[in-house]
Image (cartoon, rainbow, N blue to C red; front, side, top):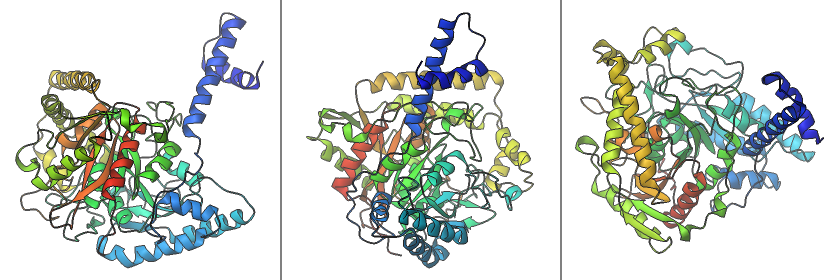
Length: 530
């Protein structure tokens, strides 16, 4: 009997009922072994790919390029860590993006990484690469508040799964980045990552503009060269909005590809499949490097699936059918401005001729219906789910924005909630049927570039730019993978504009291949003025 099957026998015997025959038992063992192999293949670190990044400054080059230089002995982990710490110290007073640092530990880990490298021992593909992590993700030994007062001195005893995986691959934590309370409750009228503990973050391209939320601190510090990458969470656009506003790349992987264990809002409940975690980087190649490292079941997140990762390099763009739209059907405050429409059309023009076909088409009415169903579901319990989070962490003074909403809740009946849930699922099915005609859907991330932080009368946490549910949240509800990449700028050239590259479930490879193509045409991330 092969060793893999022998090793699986005990697992099978421990977790499943007694089989009726030895043949059935061996079949079960083989199934367990195959599943274990799939999990290992999903989670296994990838070898370093060649970087296409032309940046020469440590703080601005891609994580892929930096990791390659460290492995080649041209840069030490200590040099990289010191360069990023210096950059944080020079810009963070303006950005308020990093709210808790771990510099002492980072320096010690960098020295240890350099000693290991001298012996030819490499931790993994991120050996020595400095990172920050959104403050909603647990970090062992480093204060993790989740932006709520009840956790203001909370020090986790273990890392969130995604944090543990990138640290095991060699990444070094420099600090935690700003987010709204529980990632869900900002400050009314402040359209950036903001909370009562740390205040609001600021956009590196214009300090009066929004970083968006809720991974706004992550977006700002990565864009400014204060971290090689961050890992954000996306419940309604919280990776994609900050990627757009701050001119970087970000991925919301297919729902349940990446475990949510150790995030302040993890798995379970009616909103389970809405929550996705993913890396935020300056270059698309880093999304390709990091996403498979953090993917795959951890046997704690009960929804996580062992789906194999497909290399984006195997995608033939010439064979792809592309659909695009310039507004997602959004109106009113969220209506798409001309600068954004122009950028989306430019992306469509780049893809014309490079792909099989490019068609201006969108399932607008289905997106609107799905957005409405999502709105009902998210507020239908009167934000009782938010109250439970506050009670769990013993927070007495919650986000003013949520407090106001709770004061006058519009609670739906059970029948109305179930109806909205059914409506959501019907829309998901209709969207899958529509997507059968295309491989890629390109659309705006938001109606506008980053807008002013201080907006009278209140503003959406996403950035005051209308990057709400018709644009982003609908793709949390479907669970489809989406990559955002900077594709252009506002008319004055000052503010970045990103696009969403959307694909069917589990086709991150297509998302990333198309994003890489768009990045090559647009130039992608550009150095901010600070």
